[in-house]
Image 1 (tube, rainbow, N blue to C red):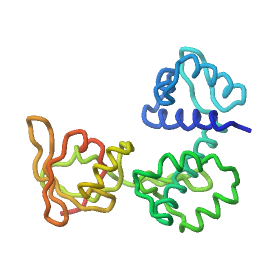
Image 2: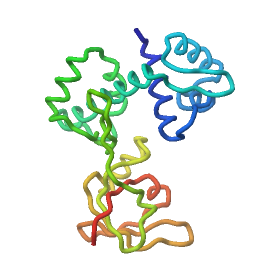
Image 3: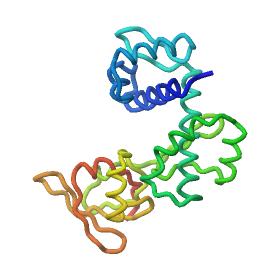
Length: 221
């Protein structure tokens, strides 16, 4: 049996490893968990004792098969609950993360399976992130960052790389939500900001930071 704190560490390690594709360093875990390296070391020793991670001091940490499965199950529950909160309870996409953080720790495989069935087996959450199925399989789709588009190319917004409340609220305010079609009109050399034209003919100028955090599926023009 794992504690909520242990589960949070496993999920953090999984997400860091997913981005870096290598053994996760203690300092990276400390930054993700907003705690000290000493506290992280204590937790890593506990997780290693439970055979959920392979940990060697100064060489980083990797999830074992058991740890990876547990982290995947947590992410599955988290993202399913986000879908439920948005689609069934009417929460905005910037309101659901903290609630899902609490709900993901509710135990019960039957509950999760019924939730998945009730939601018609969604493959992506309200932020465009993939939801693993009950067997831990992921579905990925071709997408690229807005920053990688060339002028004249267009795409449909499929997800976000940053999940902060402020960023999601900003996107909502300017109408850049999932499913919206846009075209890159111009990239400004001075600061790498971009001018885009939306499906309703509105034009927006977006910062480089926004363009590096917005995923799109390229459309054939």
